[in-house]
Length: 200
Ligand code: GAR
Image 1 (cartoon, rainbow, N blue to C red):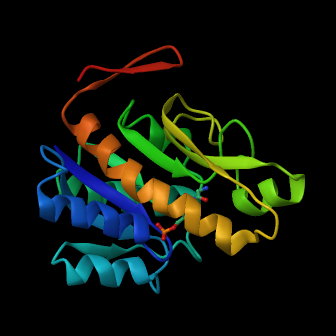
Image 2 (cartoon, protein in one colour):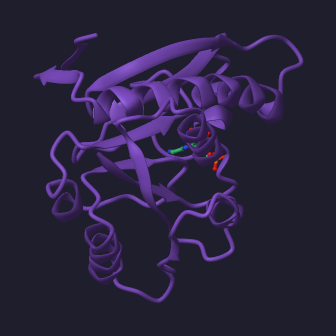
């Protein structure tokens, strides 16, 4: 199953997917294209270094609908059947999401439904939470509210700051995300209402 990866920034989660693919651990998933809304994203350089098609669709100055049509056209051109949001910092409209029913996954740096939206780690820190974590979920038209596929926690300890927590969170998501993508590509995830089950 051909997978499109949408990114905005550093791309460490993309790198985890690239590394998993190189090991054969993403199969039958295959990264077909990497698309960034930020032309300067280091993630694009990671894609190029891995000899993957890397596409920039700069959202600035574009109406949301035009931006999404360009992204969809690129996904279509590469035969993409499933989409991974790997640090993609744009909200997608229902028009986009409905093109890939139960075929878009997102990794989010909190234990959803706690701390949705932007700056989830800073939100957890400011709230005084003692644990946070990673949630990988199907994307529906709610903000970070789709059915949860995988979720793991990390502690927040005294003297932590956003950077130390982010290190812990990313270590976890780099392990979790390739596993989810492999299962999705293999058709091993089923969803009834909010409940996601895996057959493996
Ligand atoms: C990741 O930690 C991801 O969970 C988070 O952005 C980071 C991107 O890092 N996503 C969100 O906050 C989405 N709301 P990366 O570019 O190094 O993969």
